[in-house]
Amino acid sequence: MKILPHDTFTITTPDSVTIVRQRLSQKVEPQKAFRFSRNHAPYEGSISEDGFQISRIIHYRNSFLPMIRGQFEVQSHQTLIHVQMSIHPFVMAFLGFWFFFWYSAVIPILFTGAIPNHIAPIFIGMPILMLFICWGSFWYEAKRSRTELTQIIQGQV
Image 1: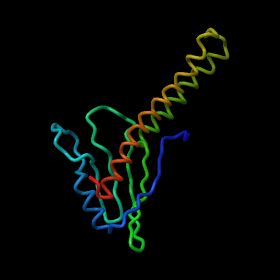
Image 2: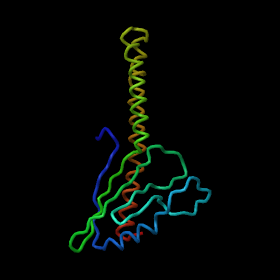
Image 3: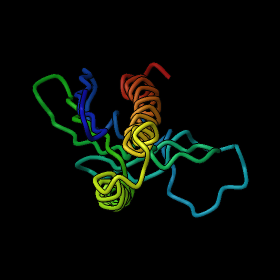
Image 4: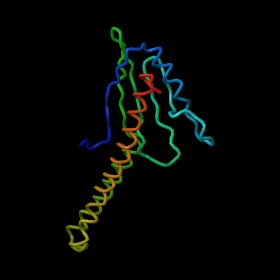
């Protein structure tokens, strides 16, 4: 299991880069600050000649929604799309700060004996529980995005 939620994979298709970009552009729209309608493409972001940077449009809160970056690579008679999914760097920085703050306060208190021994595991385990929630939220969305993106690129949707 990876400590930091991050995934990389490659999608192979016999189609040209032009066709792949066209398929993606049909399912990706520009980013908007507010969305009042549910009638939209499944992804938002940008597509360039070299690749794309997108994220799935959701109608609920999930700070651990993967940021998806892809690079196009042309080989003889096929196109490779190298995809990276990761959590937004601000969210990672916030989690790192939160872990540092939490343990820098809890560990000295534990060593002074101010917290009873039967309650100490709660204070040690709470950030670990948060980490599992982060992993679960990220991997749920990453698995869904991986499947959808593969279908879009291969022309199955």
